[in-house]
Image (cartoon, rainbow, N blue to C red; front, side, top):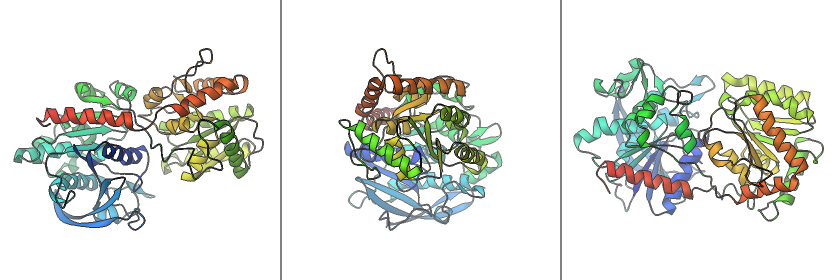
Length: 496
């Protein structure tokens, strides 16, 4: 199959979270299985052309929106056999931020991502990719999140009435339903669509525009990034206002659990570690990495449990539960290390964590910001990894943790529930600890069970860590799921 993956971010070129990781990994995995895949994303000002060996394809063309014609150039970088195409336009390349800057969200994001969607739909017809020729119209468009959700709408509204892409289906993946691309209804004119598309059956949403909702209603197939999250978002409590829409299209929705890149996240080859290790010597390997991280951070004693956490300091991630429970952890003699940063609206989390570090200098370290090196070192050094998300479509850090022999403690939601099997010490089964209720008491109960097992049943704790290391968390299973969805979407359009 020929697949065009459209996303606002594609790692390693652009990334703000899991969306970038997934949209960088899936194309490479599909290519390894013999498919022809291309990605289309913006060329942000933060992307270093030279470092990524990005070159100019020579393709130039314009797309139209309600604000007029937008001329773009198409750049290209090849990685793991995948041509990654970048939309060069001042709205992207003239700014370093992906969606905003220190002053807040960019006011023209609707226009920016409408241009991205329109350009992506022109790529198979205009950009030479295979022996100097374009991909052609026999493609599958794989749009990701609200930023690309106009792709299925534009296919239906603009191209198919002209007989273009008649058999080219679209698949829309929801990575985070909380972000839907909602804009004032008055901005509809900027999309250059007929009025019939601003209705409750497409873009209109209580007088506003809702791009994700429109994509959910028009794509041939829908996916999200774990089976449990696919069920949760069809409920009133988990649907972020779109549960009724999702229930209408439940037969089009497939939950496919994300994987990770086993070469990037591999303790046997990780350049960031003091000692590399695999499943045969992970006890000694982790012990040395634990001592090294403790020494680097100035934490005394290496004979106490080390709990790690890496992620955005955001209400979704359960940061309040962590902050509430850090004093309890310190009272247990546990060391806690966190790496993360907050958006300006949540700066209070950074202040609270710095205060906890001041109050508990022998137990707490808060690394505010982000460091790929430190993230890898925490995964390798920690005994337990804490991930108490309020909701988690898929989650990646729990997969990294298991890969590194670090036992996860997670809330039973979304991809966390699908990937972490509860440890039953009596049956010697499972890979981690889970809790149900989103509150500090439930999380502390799970931590108590984990810490008790670490102290009193170390052999079973280590076997749980070993099972996690042996678990297949690669993209192979996920990619097979996407292949099936692409085939089903193509059949709906009369293709394949």
